[in-house]
Image (cartoon, rainbow, N blue to C red; front, side, top):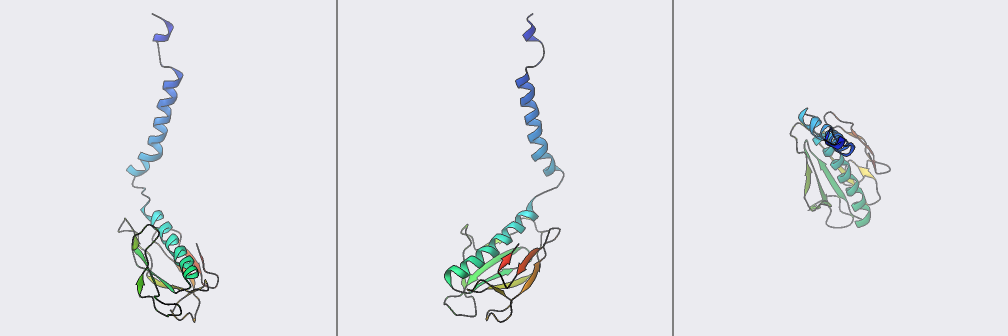
Length: 152
């Protein structure tokens, strides 16, 4: 027998190590119940709120964001200067709302009004800017600065 017929080559060992690394990084956390529904929902809420603020400024109209326990929906005023949102606003992916894939992930219910000037208020007339946070179960809450329109 030749010396090459005994054992494994270095390439075979490295391929096995890479496959084991991929399995341990992806499959094992899913088996342990560590799913990503919560962080994904938080990222979608932040994205929707930022989109609402940018849309309000670019269209020069009031945009309302309604955050419920497991979803966020947007609507826009049909005319400039209106104090109420009466037209559904499609999100960038074409859907009408973002919703949590996990029923255990909930957020505090609130409605935010994004003014054309870039501020976030607690009413459609824009009389009182809002500051605070939106709490999502088990995750870092989303901070809102009404005077500047900052969402994170």
